[in-house]
Structure formats: structure tokens, C-alpha cells
Image (cartoon, rainbow, N blue to C red):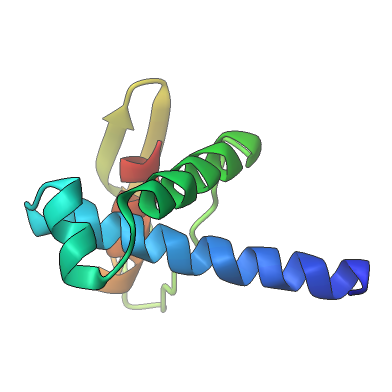
Length: 109
């Protein structure tokens, strides 16, 4: 497999595994119960969770989430979100998808 295809496959795996970890965390179930419900071995889930965590640690600490602001929106800061050493400004006009992305990133830190 070429290096480029390998990177694409790894990124696809991490995307799927990250989604699974997020689903587990929001389910309220134990790892064992969630894994049984989703037909995933507990050891496989822990392996995937560890890979996601390591990938997040390697990634940059700063993530810019682009805002779609039009002229009718004021560009003032509506909220300042602090999580540990991470600080994020939320501007007036930020839509729900942008906020969801921001909180997903903060939750993964």
C-alpha cells in the first residue's frame, strides 16, 4: 500500500474510532455494555480509544474553527470559554455547528 493511501486509511480509522469514543462517552453505559451493544470487543475499543488519544496529543494545541459571519452580525465576542490552559472566543453569529465543533474539540482535550 502506498504511503498516501496508508495515511488516508489511518485518518479514516481515527475518524471512525473518534466517533465511537464520543458515542460511548455520551451513552451513559459502561464500556462493557456499550461494546456488547455495538458488537465490539472491549480490548478492541480500548485499543482504538488509545490510538485516538495519542493522535489528539500529537495534534496542535490550537484549533481554529472558522466562523461564517455576514455583515448583519456584530463581530464582538459573545463568550469566552476556558478549559484548563485552553481559551476559545465565541463571536456573535456563531452557528450551532460551529459551537458543537468547538465543544467537541474541548471535550477531547
